[in-house]
Image (cartoon, rainbow, N blue to C red; front, top):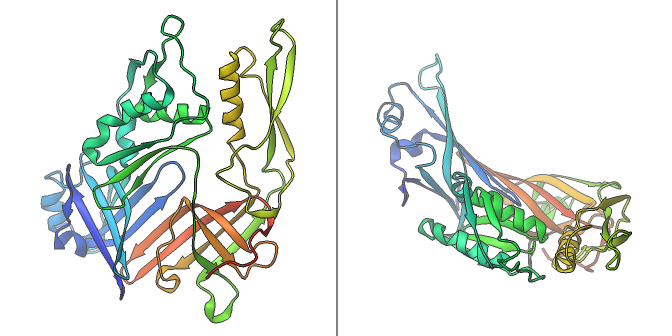
Length: 374
């Protein structure tokens, strides 16, 4: 690709192997989108009608959806980074009248798509949330997915004589439903080694060690091509949970739910005040333990009013910017400098070019830290 940057592409069923030379020569671009919930990729090949990719490999099932696994690894400065480990979900062919200009586009998603294929109906008697999640994820160890499950703050188990929890739908939908109830997140993160992934179920914790700062308007030290910041005054809201009094069970009592997300501090010295009030009556007829669990789940759903987006050249930045981590911003002014959460990153890779688009967020103006490290 570029001096100091190497791309490794593994393709195949079950255990992928390095793509053959004919495939790498036809590869014109790669796009990988890494977000908070689900990640995806797109491979674009430019080829001719008589090329082996179209006449031999494609008819033989080389890029068949669901059956084909793709691993994308970028090595920068001798440090490999697994950008994607997923399954092909779609392929599109655009024949061209120009010789050698036909385009084959292969689209896919991370390995969580394997959890969203089969609808099931399974009872889980007397099992808490985290035990059910571990039991579901156990079957995906064959794909190299290692579960990391953090038990919810509120331990709540229904007696089998009263209620038996049932899974209806796919594994992914059921896990994300439980995560939403507890204010947790669930995603599958590729790496740290090719062929390995981590299925994380727990609070939205960002790795506290900041990545190298994004510098703008700093002359020779600038390492981003563009950066824009915005403050949305309507983004934050106050959640009010309505419960019934414990005596008559008829009188509604509104209970404001504060922000309980200790794992995502605001990062800004001047937090943005909430502008909306959202009233929920979902806990009105729940038991005490379930009502507390509902309140904790709402309290963990923090919102950020301050956002930033931009693009950078990886060669100038010097490393690969990763999502679900923290990064510093310098040169944007007193109000917008400081640390941000990296919500999503899009990798755009072409021959001789590696760029990234990123989306950042935090709550509050003015940095809490006196200085952002380079």
